[in-house]
Figure 1 (cartoon, helix red, strand yellow):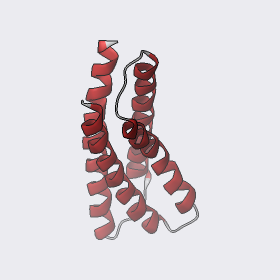
Figure 2 (cartoon, rainbow, N blue to C red):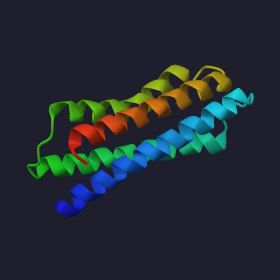
Figure 3 (cartoon, rainbow, N blue to C red):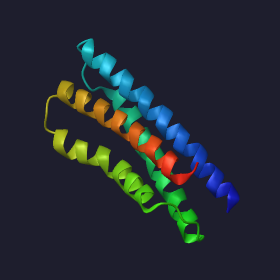
Length: 122
């Protein structure tokens, strides 16, 4: 179980850095007049998959009897639903608007990862 906990802790840092990077990348593209395209759109999808893996590892740790502060679960649930919620809201909007919203949501998920690390003891 220790290896799963270590993977969960390491992946939490990966989520934090990754979403910070794509959030900043997206905002720079937005400022430069860009729109949501395949490259950054794919990066958002990859990030969402990584968050999904992070949640699965957390559930494995939880099933093993490890306990954390209850607010830690709130951060994990919010992280996994934030990007799909933004997609459902922005799917029929202009790609430029979507880029701005997805980039801000990426920074939001970065913040959730930071709080998850703090409350999880990683």
